[in-house]
Image (cartoon, rainbow, N blue to C red):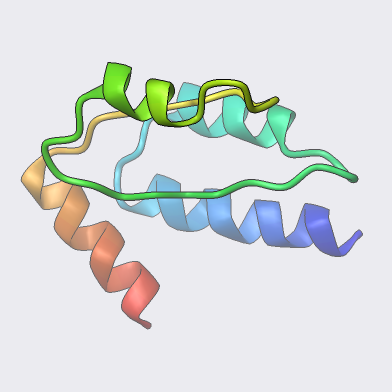
Length: 80
């Protein structure tokens, strides 16, 4: 129940900064009881290199791009 509440609160915050609803839905479906998630915000990351860094691990990498305005709003949301 706590996982559902946390996921709901997080998705509300993400929607407030303009992150795509489909990305939020896909992420919510993947994070289920017994699983975990690591959210990383980076600048100028090369997705192929990020994938290669996790080679051999059992994981699924989800990614999205943010505009400068969205990035600023997300940083402010997590700073609160």
